[in-house]
Image (cartoon, rainbow, N blue to C red; front, side, top):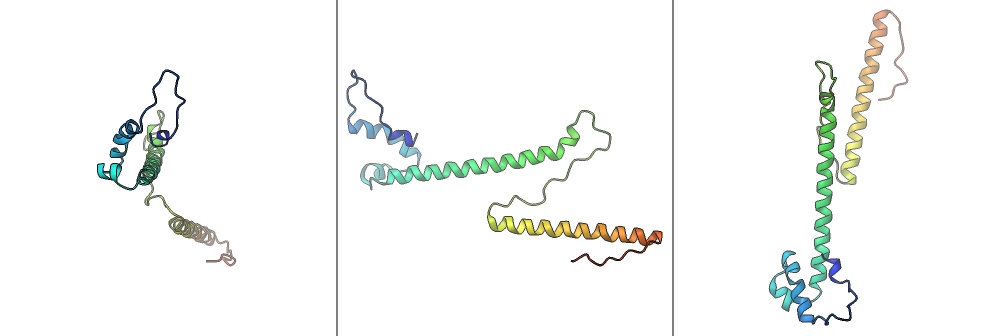
Length: 150
């Protein structure tokens, strides 16, 4: 309702022009709903209405982002349990593990998250390499483990 308040419609020839008092009274409930007080609307700075509309846009964008994030978590949860929901799932099928940390919301968190993920992957690769070297050593094949940087 905010931006459409400023859009003028073409008056039809049979319409009588609306007085400014009627326009102000027509929009008064909208600004009360935004949190503006009666005194601010009628006696305060006339630019406040613009700021209240902009604040409402910011609140709506924030709410939209929160709902999107909530949808991402629900989607991930459904993906995690999807193996169990398969009609022909084998007995003993397990769900995928759900994320153990929240999604990063800013660049600093995203960088930290990526670094932690890289370290975990490197540690898993190192464990797999060590297991392979141990298996080869158990069979009597000697392989050098040089060339792998920590």
